[in-house]
Image 1 (cartoon, rainbow, N blue to C red):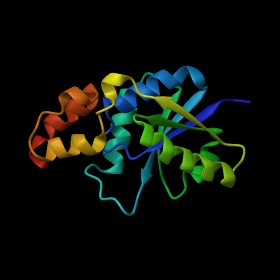
Image 2: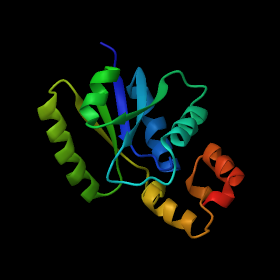
Image 3: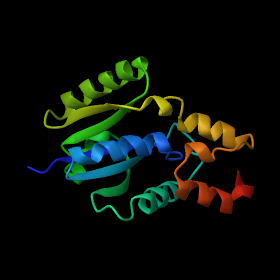
Image 4: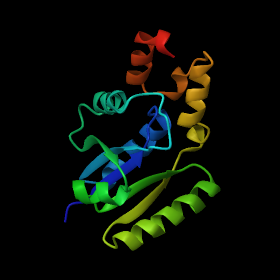
Length: 161
C-alpha cells in the first residue's frame, strides 16, 4: 500500500515553518498533498490560486508533492486523494491538545486514516501565518519568515498589501 499523506491548512501564506514540516515529512510518504482548506469563517489575505501557485513553484521539482484546494472536512479530502495519513505540525504543547482532539474526531470518521504529528524545529516556533500577515499589513519585513518564491511574489505586488 502506498503511503499517501495530506498536509491540510490555510497556508495564508505558506511560511518557512510549513516548508520545514513538509520537507522533513517527505521521507515518510510516497506522495504528499498540500491541501489548502477553504474556511468560510475566515477571510484570507491571499487567494487560493495564489497560495496554490506558491506551493507549486516551491515544489516544482519534486514529483512527490502536489497542491490541492478543498472545502469541508479534511477527511473527505483525504478520501478524494486516497490519502491514508494526515500530517500536522506542532509548535507548542497547546497545539498538541487541539490537534489530538481533531485527530480523534477524524479517526472516528474514517478509521483507515491516521494522523502523524511532527514537531517544528525550535527556530520556527514563532513563525505563524497569522503573525506574518499582521507584520505584512503593518508594512514590516516578513522575508525572513517566508520561502523565496513567496518573497519574490510579494515584492512584485507590494502595493496591494
